[in-house]
Image 1 (tube, rainbow, N blue to C red):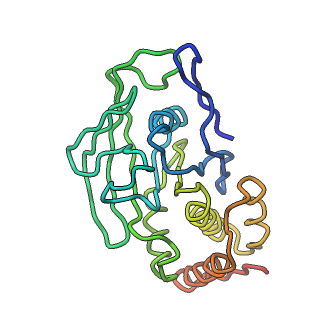
Image 2 (cartoon, rainbow, N blue to C red):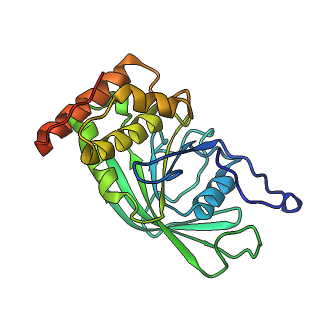
Length: 236
């Protein structure tokens, strides 16, 4: 699991409901977690900054902010600033699409602490994608469009990607596994979908909970294969 650096004397816990998922090339490159609760917003930003997350992909957010069970962890509008615990989060640039909203966020802190991974006065930048519809409501072609956007925004180098939804598995897990499968398809035209899903289920058992999601994996892979015109074998 993901462990947070923290000093208990400062009231910081090391626990967060999050797990590492490997990418095609690197171990622990992706993170599955739940949408921050009102009580875990500060822990979320500790995780983002400590593990150098540069892309956050979020599902099931309440865009009207009427759901009190979801933490208010980032500003919705451009140039808005939000304070949360040790952190200040500012939205610099916003772009909207029918399937997602993209924001460039800047995170900073005024707090000096040996357990903080950013120092006072320095800024930490990342991309936040808010998916405006749940994957269950998307056609395979819409999912592929969403995946294309996510992959084009994915960090180069050591930056990590966080996928999150309400339970930290159902929708975030689907997109995370699709990202992994598409990367493997680019590099190895033979892949066995059940083996990949099984490996991720060993880490987060709640991912791909339905036959419908399994079918979506194959449908999106087939569309991607057609669009790239590359020979591939998905296996059974």
